[in-house]
Length: 201
Image (cartoon, rainbow, N blue to C red):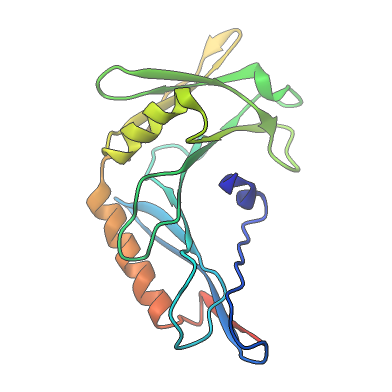
């Protein structure tokens, strides 16, 4: 699944071309107060050649929380327009040395729709953070992907066996600000921004 990439934050898709030619690969991160953060992992591309494989795009909507994180994957999208979201990855805090399933994520939309997901695993190298992730293959999760696609703000809380956590708010309704970040990422990619792109021999 696409979020296996997030543990190492690395993405490479080698395109057909001359073995001797240099290629360019980019990991572009752009952010704004209203749009949140957008990260684009590009495949390796021969300069001047058309991009064959689409990039992998991860959107982190703006939020009032640093503890709980929502990441939305757009696999197979382009730098011109995002398609439908293909997956979700939610990181959340747990008690130190607790098991991942000691916390349950509760996601609520403005119309009152609620989704509950039990923690799946601990984050690599962490004993106090867990995550939930899924794609379109999870039938129950498709409705949440649909809510994100139609631009609904979300509230995410972490329920534990003895208490309910405060809800973290995510501005996933601000699709215009998200798309402005996509346009900025495209300009950086087209210009092979040296801060975000590197040449691979």
